[in-house]
Image (spheres, rainbow, N blue to C red):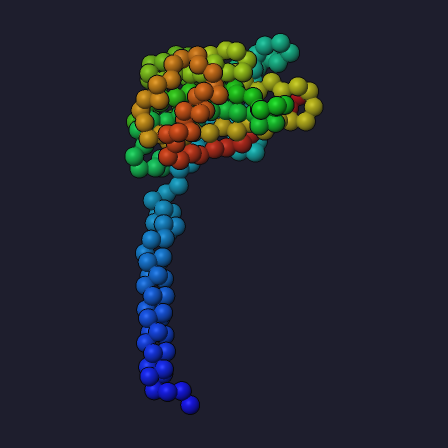
Length: 200
């Protein structure tokens, strides 16, 4: 039989552990962001030009060398950006290109009041009117350059819109897309993307 003082000490210790466990559980339930975040909506990207998992239409394909397309930047619409968004950026990246991949488009300084881009926003002057700036893509051209992979297996193109915490990343028109990507990454509050395919 245990001494009374030991029984009291063990009971006291058990109560303290139980109280601490309940407090931690309550704190976890209170702090858990999952349900609240879902109630607020999720940052999403849709496109009339691109359909997730689908193939790129000729209108968005590059138009040089042996690629014959319209080279029109895609129509894009985004919804439910994170709180605190001060601007947006958009990139199109071929993750299957040899080496480090291939940058097809990078644009930043899209005002926070904008939630969509029309088709051909890059070449039409629409982005310039907004005050947005476009990178030099890996075709060595400022602005949008559509898919043009070598013949063979289709490539995957990642189209991403970023919600940014800054309205000014201090990026100039025509700077390399890789530089845009770095600066966008430092200010990203969230992102939404779709992946499309194209092969020849």
